[in-house]
Image (cartoon, rainbow, N blue to C red; front, top):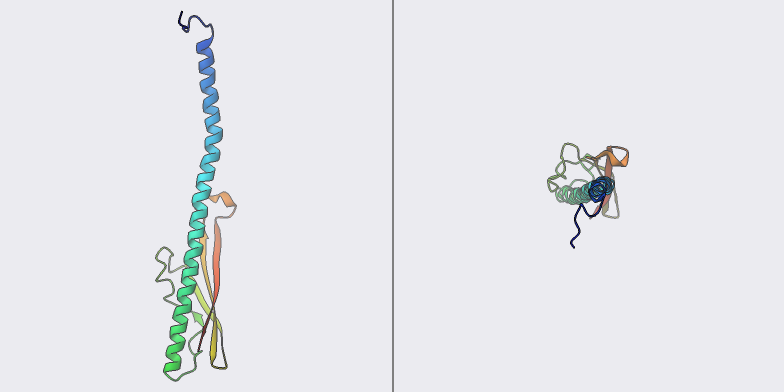
Length: 148
């Protein structure tokens, strides 16, 4: 004889109660999974921004080396004009806002025909989802250009 709902008293009521428990379990597990997903996306964005700031620092080193070499070829001191803000370093990083990218050259020294320039790059990173406490955190990178 096949089983039916009428043969088992209370079966329909148990199924309804179990459906409520399933919804509760999904709410608990789903919120954790959604938090992990959003956190992974945010960390990916942060790591991408860090890499773009490194690319901007490498581009700044290249530009500084070119400008210093042009100074030497023109017969002027290598350090002339190699301090302050450096424009043009953000052109190879299209995903960064060039207006917010700060590239600064400092400490140009020449000793024994070798010129060294320190370069600092800073970019403000803003989290889209404020999971990590603060919504804005600067990403910075320093580099050194050496040429002769």
